[in-house]
Image (cartoon, rainbow, N blue to C red; front, side):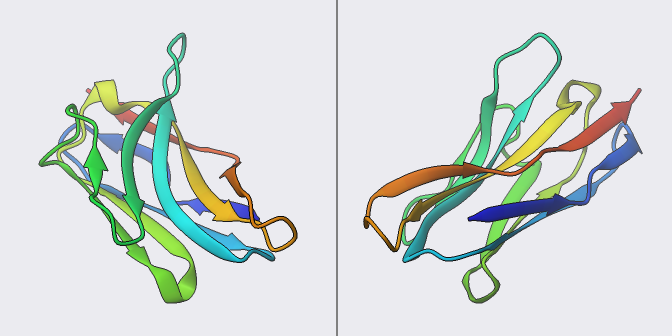
Length: 120
């Protein structure tokens, strides 16, 4: 599974950005897609996740500001980020949990990351 992210960039505090991530390749199914982020000197953390048919999860720090959505037909997940703050500055990574065609086991896949920088 290959994940390609787009939509990062530089924005002023209070602004908005929309991230996209497209999954491609051979797999039995994609079970969940989501977004993580990693700021300099910090551990990677969950931002938002959307399992198929499951409850959407958000980090407390982004609730009511970020919205995750998914187009299953296009194997694409989006992250709409509003009211951005300087502390949202990080590299944002797309994550997919997919079932392999060969083994029918579930694996984690990651995109290359896209930089989001919020200036004050």
